[in-house]
Image (tube, rainbow, N blue to C red; front, side, top):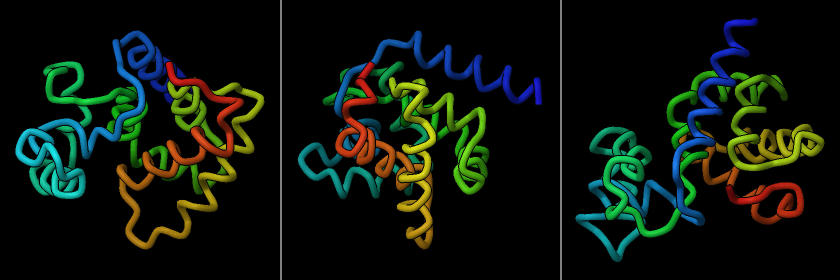
Length: 153
């Protein structure tokens, strides 16, 4: 338990310290897909996922910022790198990694339980959910339903 908590804290700290931009869907606006299909977000996302499951897309903000047109990749990077654990914790309704993800996204701790519940409900409806689907749900919830409790860092 201590090891998991320490790991989540270290990962969250790394993402909070990293420079980022705001309002971005990294699968559509970053990586090789965005370079090949700059005006077609759907084609860019498909290309990124086919190429390497989107890993390059979510990490390209740090390595090649010119390939991203917006900004909040910290949350996407965290989700991509911790997806299996996040998926389990969302199913449970709580956990250190879910809390770290919401901290990275700039959400107040007092709102975490409500946000996780809302994410959990939407995520359960996705038949073949993946890191991108989770990212889209998180961003949808924190920018609309929980905008007052979350800020773009």
